[in-house]
Image (cartoon, rainbow, N blue to C red; front, side, top):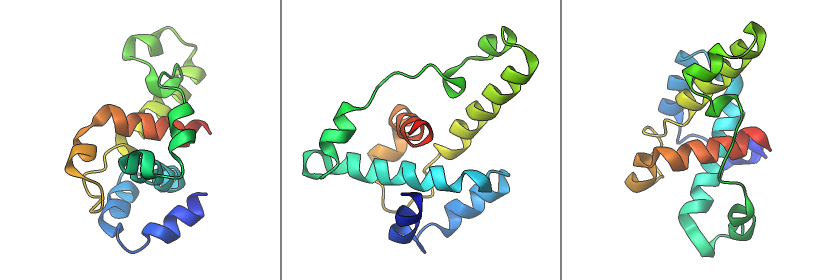
Length: 123
């Protein structure tokens, strides 16, 4: 759960939490913590007890966070606004540069971070 992830990583993420709050996304902190837990388990690879589950998850998503600006123009206004909010969330929350315990390779892999966000957000 996001609460358990927050307890596990608590105290180490003050800078990251401040950044998220400054982006007016504090309501999404629970997804941020779930995303971090997924990334930590992903880094462990086959050593992670979560490996079979992670390996079974989808790699492609077709929700609001995955849409392009052109897609938003094709949607009705309310739907477009909700989809844009999802896209903004993925852009803001998948920035893990201020997370001290992730490897530099993980921090630089934007596709991996977006995938982890999608998993946390859609489960």
